[in-house]
Length: 265
Length: 296
Image (cartoon, rainbow over all chains, first blue to last red; front, side, top):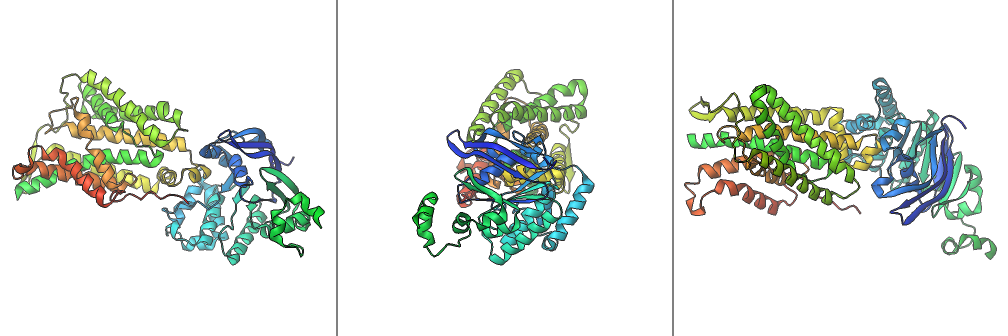
């Protein structure tokens, strides 16, 4: 196994000992690659990221079984700050920037988990090159930024900790298509600079284009996985996530159990 | 006119002491979302420690020790009581702090008994004459100290990493944790700082013209509650403004109570609560508080 691989094996997570959100999920985020996870609402995508980042206790969730490790170092059971220190940083769903603080202070907050001053200065330089708009808005309250700018700030804030692996939870949610494209380009650029990315998206077209490998999560299980290109070509993914049906009515198709659809025709 | 000016100075001075207490209250609320009903007992711990140590150590070392002891006790409450039940919700924890308050206050009241402990402060009952107004030295010392402490605190809150960590934890605990902020440490620091501020406030609540520390001191500290609440529980600015409003109201209401005899005696003690009720009727979240918004 490469030294920087984020490996998840047989992970089961439940909330309040009652609701099982993930069942024996295994996946790998290889060093320096973009890995996508697709799935509908409630499939367990955000749960997966909470488990990795150690924030399940905020939602009364617990890891019942399985392992999470970064290059052989166990992450499961660590507190969130220790996961950040290990090099895995999450950009949460809905961006969750600190609206009452300025843009500058938000970036500063992103560096609170790291000690190395010189590293922080370098990270800030890199973030401002990547997102020049953040430099222009440095003194503004973050709550006044547009949705796309807030997403850039959330990503910039996470990059301040110089992560080895960046976890992105639906970064294009609620953004105009043009802005979603911009964010997509930024993700590609971040990856090109050497950060591995675990990308969770409902925008499957974008995710499959960016990723090398992809996983499909349904009701807490991995139902499909493989190279992104191959997945993009399968009927199932085309119909359910890319909205490219055959001539059949896509809505009617969706309502039917997926396993049966193959026999219908 | 001189009476008015004197009352004004007194009011601002006592108000700044209330602001110190309210500030501690607000810091704990912001960092942990727990309403700390044990705050008055922390104040009593600080005051008691100073009064007991002033004999052997002298005033300034005793004050420092008192501040350190109050901070340590506050930190212990956080470590031993609140942290263990972190999973519980904030309302439960608020009630737990009432229990802590009763325990600490009962023990200290037993220790103090019927005594009135002197703080042994260097100002004693000296009075300063400034531009025709006579003000007790203790009141000026209180004002200067409170302003200096509050300024330091606000600067730290705004510009240091500690301050940024406190503010992000207050705004969104989970997102703060995702940034690598150690919420446990933030919470511990908040309690310790609040305890330290309370100890300083205890000193100025018990020096001249008050006879000294006795078992009713923690009741005086209760006046800082309306200060914190009318300012807005989650606002540091609110704590300061609230403290001043309560201090001024109290000072003016007691100063002019002879002209207000139709309202009965002891108006000064009641007026702060009246002001709080009126302000909350108009602004339910307090003057500077953020209204609680439900997430959709």
